Image 1 (cartoon, rainbow, N blue to C red):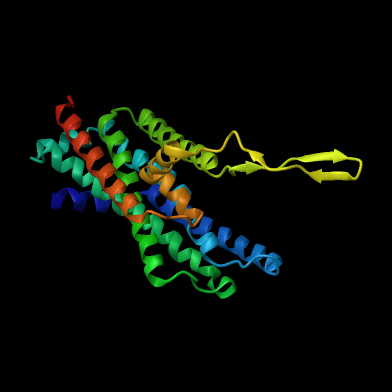
Image 2: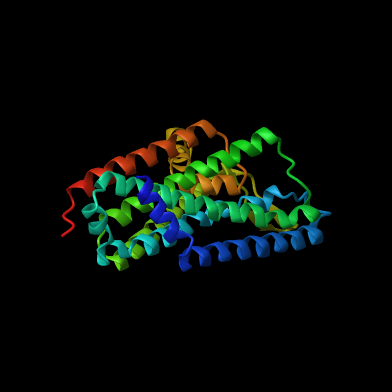
Length: 276
């Protein structure tokens, strides 16, 4: 295992895709936060802006960066015969899989760290975090764990699909699909319970009496939607971006469950895969 990780890390530090992703994430964070500073300076009189409103924006995009890096980095291992060579020198399929997972986790956490550091450029304008240190720590811990869950999902795809092009497409579409699903669920939960229309009378335009909103999700279905959002890493990221984390323990356990489940299933399938 140590030799596999050493080889993966040696390749990682020389990988162009990794450094392109790192540079892109850094530029993205600085530009986004500076734009937030500009917006805050214009609208400060109307809204109490803080760094929190922008700092966790990475939670929406980190999954796509993870999918891109993982699929490009490990996508060539089948076609180049790298996996077969690793097995020839005595490494087991389980060790190969876990080493790939750890490498992906490391790279994706570095991408997140680059954002967190680059986003500090907004501190002189927006100030430090208004949330408590314990709440900030919880947010960051949740971010680390759903990043690990993303790594588990992407590693699962890259290790069971033999074609690099398919790995890229499947990984990116899978994360994008989960992000769209989370957005749809969040939008449904954001619907108000009642709606107020506008009607034209002899006195001009007047607001009508509030009426039930047919799109409002209530009862058990609302709890189900909220549970799915807390379970999906994309849902966790969306709630983090909106600063609406209510059930941190549920999110943490969900990320751990996804990581273990994808890893267990991935190793089981990978061990049965014919690499000839």
